[in-house]
Image 1 (cartoon, rainbow, N blue to C red):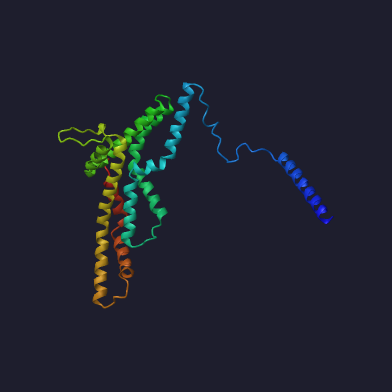
Image 2 (cartoon, rainbow, N blue to C red):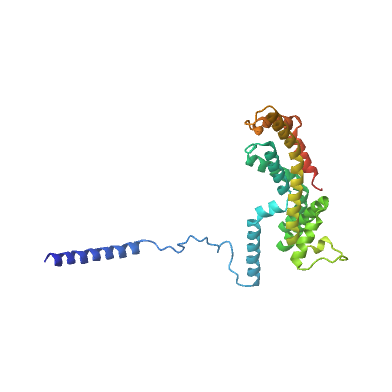
Length: 269
C-alpha cells in the first residue's frame, strides 16, 4: 500500500512540474536573437539591384578601412620611427618606468601630427573635400589619399637610401627578379610592396638614431663601472651610481629638445 501511494505522489508531482513548465514557457517572451548578434539591417540596406549592391559594398569597404585605421596610422606614418627612438632613449637612461608609456605615446602622436601635417593637408584637399562635395567617388578618393601617403613614404625611403627593401618586396610580390638593365619607377611598385619596405626603413633609421643616443650613456656606465672596480666596490651596482650622472648630463644638454629636433630633421619634407 505504501509503495502504491509513493507512486501516486511521484506521478502527481511530475504532472505539476510539467504543467508549471508549460505555463512558464508560454509566459516568457520569445527571443529572436539569442546569441546577441548585432542587427546590421539598418546599417547595410538590402541589395535588391546593382545600385543597391554597389552601395552595400561601399559601406563594407568603408567599415573595413575604419577597422584597420590604427594599423594604417602606425605603419604608414612617422609614428613608428618616433616611438621606437623614444623607447630606446628611455632604456638608455636606465629609467624603465619613467617617463611612463602613456607620455611617450602621447609625445609620439604630437610629433607625428607635426610631421604628417603637410601630407594630411594634401589628403584633405585632394581626396576628402572633393569626396564630401560629391566631385569624386569613394574609390577615387581612396586612390588619391593613397597617392599622398605613397609620396610621403617614397620621400622617406629615398632620404635614408633604403630602396633595396622596396626591390626585395617587389620581387617577391611579382615572383620575378629585377633584371640588371631594367628601369624601375615608383609608379610600378604596388602599395602592398611599398608599405613593408617603408616600415623596415623606419625601423632601421630609428635604431641608427637610438645607437647614437646610447653612446654617451654607455660611456658614463663604463666610467662608473671602472671607478667602482678600482675602488674595490664591486658589490655596488654601477647602474645605481650612473643613473644620477646620466640624468644630469641629459638635463644639462637639453636632451629632450635635441632628441625631438633630431627626429623632426630626419624626415624628408
